[in-house]
Length: 586
Ligand code: PEP
Ligand code: MG
Image 1 (cartoon, helix red, strand yellow):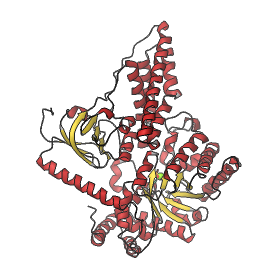
Image 2 (image 1 turned 60 degrees about the horizontal axis):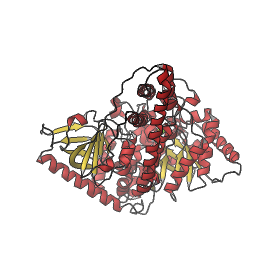
Image 3 (image 1 turned 45 degrees about the vertical axis):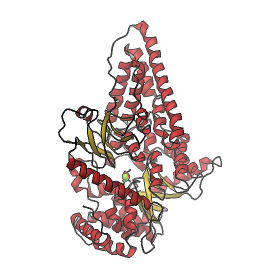
Image 4 (image 1 turned 120 degrees about the vertical axis):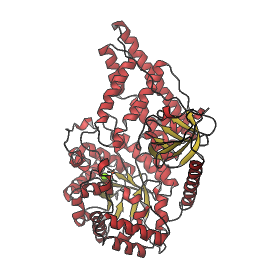
């Protein structure tokens, strides 16, 4: 029973997890619970508060049950999302304030909970960073679970779905995604969500093709409709004709063939034909991404972002909580190394404890290492946690947004204090390597001075391009001006590598540029020792690396540096790559 409108329709959403799926729609009811607010008489209030508390307890029990189930079916790596949701059920802002509103406003629990949610959402809406803004989605998911418990609605679990289907839902929670059996649910499409929502991250980690942020797809398709989804481009084709079928079947086969071929590279070294070895690592911010880095043959984690522990909360995570997370990451990646970046947040985002003012220009504001140096006690707690994790495997630490030598010295002094504070109580790696991110133009210019202070550099090209070209990396109107191959960027990269090598330290890149296979000959030719990227790019970059000699790459890099515009560099690179490696990047 497909939809009555059987014409071919092409819809556009956000590609959340690459891969093509072709199948029939299965709509699963994930609509939000409808809530009406009403007033209570004073004598009804205590019972209402306890009804709310019971719903919270039931939600906790459900999540704990799910956690135990997942522990046996999927193992420990994917549990941190459920843990984050369990933590929210103890959150004073979410739970405490709601109970308080029931009492002070004399309204029903559903109404009070919705009000708290709206308040939290307004708070998140003001956040510039897309990733952090989307954390509001986690709060909504938890609120839905409590609401359903209050109105007594049960939801079908995705684990119960039969047949081979593409699930279409208003939204799917991370818990939903974790229950997906890939032999039955071959892909999913949702109205809500963005690229960095938890569900999208999990879909990528589990490699289920997914398109999110479709806005109204639940109203545009019907159960049984045939659909094609392309999780890379975000295209969804409803009721495809024979031509679309053929086309996407071919693309699907090509994608799967490429994945299989790339998979074969997994255990081969990241080495050029003339024997030059570099390290290809993965970037991670969730424990569940580590498995994917392993599967894609990464040499470790080159950038472990620590921000996610700090969002969604009113009290900063203490040393113990941070240690548990870093320890889990180190164990999951062991024996390969994990490079942990200290907190890289900005402005007034979500650290109420630190009581920051609004800023006119947060990108140039109180963020990253500046913020850490301003709050030495919180910074040292993070450093102690990282130091303790260094006793469990190979760990390196590095500082974000460094603009000069004084900051590095101050950060290193605090690291020494942190070591003393551990005072023999906890073991740590005495020789823990310390690095900095190079992402501010001043750091490029004084790279030689900075190199004397640290053990490695890691270039954050995302920010370095932004600050060098004065292009806001999140401004959709400036996308065409955000040019990784701009001669200023290439010259900066060259200066950084040269300064690092002159001082005998390692030069790495952990910005998005590192994961673009087309740039590999330049980055290799410039002399970078390590590239860290999203997991799925590792074999793609390795494939080019294993075909490109260091000598060839050196020539390509030298030539690339002679052009005057990014467009010229790009057209040179494209022709060079297709000529040398029979690979096309159009
Ligand atoms: C970068 O700036 O390139 C980087 C890796 O850091 P982030 O994207 O987290 O700012
Ligand atoms: Mg950065």
